[in-house]
Length: 154
Image (cartoon, rainbow, N blue to C red; front, top):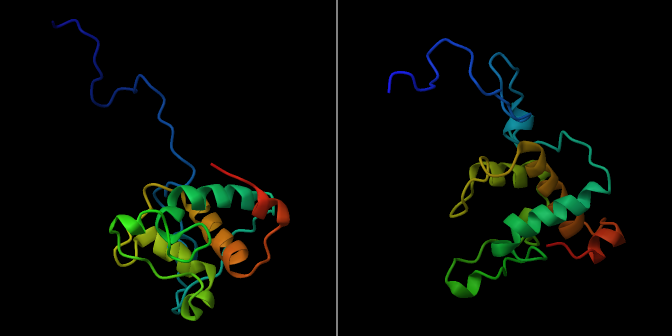
């Protein structure tokens, strides 16, 4: 019993420790526009990332995996859980929501909104911004490439 392998304090770990890219390390500068989706002077931030059109397909897949269940495929608040008794979320096509910058959608996904839970621990930061970019470009502004609109993602 005394000779079993074990890790002792202050000795090198037997396994390598891998840190995800999106993890904030000690001493890093926390830019509130990127981390929170809000500007220091107030209001919601614009998207700090530039996404290629090819990445919108990934945004569509993420949106359909995490958001479309409640918000619906076209963002009208008619997801498949609404008939099951979940309260209907606000439509993205509501004029008050339509004019919001991408930081609004990122902020809601990061912190939750009303009955919506937070996706901060479930979706990495850059992918939350990608979902916000997909919502703004493809669901609200009709600036979506045809191959993304026609693509069937699962």
